[in-house]
Length: 229
Length: 297
Image 1 (cartoon, each protein chain N blue to C red):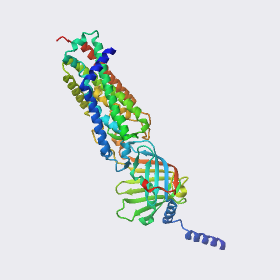
Image 2: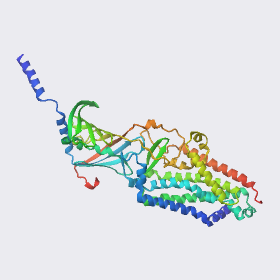
Image 3: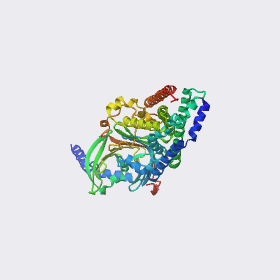
Image 4: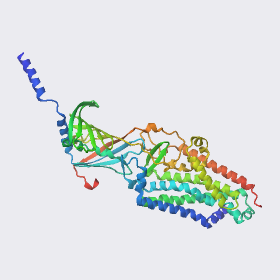
């Protein structure tokens, strides 16, 4: 009986003494992981899925340099780069001194229990109103982020990790964003009416734009020229 | 017949008005090229006004030789029918005006042969005009602005679209489009030739041709459902811009363009058939009328 009470007491003691990691610690560990990267150059393919844009898959290169320089460039040809795509840089989201962090519990994504944090910017004039990040607590990487801005609607990022998880760099990013309805000025284009059935405008409204970036390789901490940005 | 054609081509080449068309095309193309070189971004901003908040685009790359040629053709192919009418409208009426028609018909050639030669001469002039347009609008623009992927701004039904065609998938589309334009403009030449048979001077058929083209173009684009359904399909002007069909690239389920594809080839083929039918009908009427034409009064 004595041993049993001792065992229960010890269990309770350790349960209280080592609670689940708090959200700030998890965010800090994710930040430390990302902070290993001073700069990178990543090549990949970007598939843009927007109702009015009929564009091919683009070969792109992403350049990043600390603290916040990020540039997406098309290797060849003309490319439509979503303006909010700069938010794929997670560094700015993890600067704890710029946000109030609120623990928003847990949520399961792809069978992994994520820790959810809501980040409220301290700066009243910040364009970002609210960010919600979903962190994998075992690998300390952000798997999903939703950012609501004043001017440009809501962005959503879903990241999948692979070879570069040690640096907190994703292999695949799916970036969703709000698009405005595209309207050409009337009488400018003089189009050929081929008599085919046309889509009704209702089918085209309220569609979110999506850009899927698959990275082939990263060159990490080898230096990136400033003139690229 | 070959000698007759050579004589007709010689006559066309000796007329100063023939070169007005080439000079006009050169002037328009050069003005466009200068304007876009100086401030092409303004045009791009106009076309992208509702999306430039959401997307970044390298405007310098986008304003390239292929894009320029499309913009120029978009404008020019509305005016080129007038230039074609200048020559074809003069084919018979010019001879009548100068009093050489009777003399010409005393030669041992049939009236049908003579009319066919006049038509072929107009067709060769139309093709020459298009080749000049290709040199000025396409090849000169490629030299000035370089080549890259081509953007097409389009309204399909009530939906506005931006299509992107890869740089290595564009040139064949231009060759096909110029071929289509040659057939479309030959309809104008056939119409002007028919009207030319009825007149004793060149001004009448030229102006009449231009008026018919303008009126039919307005009717084709008026956008009234009853006209769109019952009248538009029968007007040749509805198919004059069919060359653009070669730039409407086919897309897959995800909206990505498929290189080498056309969105609606059957519609282009149908348009070509209708235009060729117009040429045959107009030429047939011309032959029938010309064979019975009283040239003595």
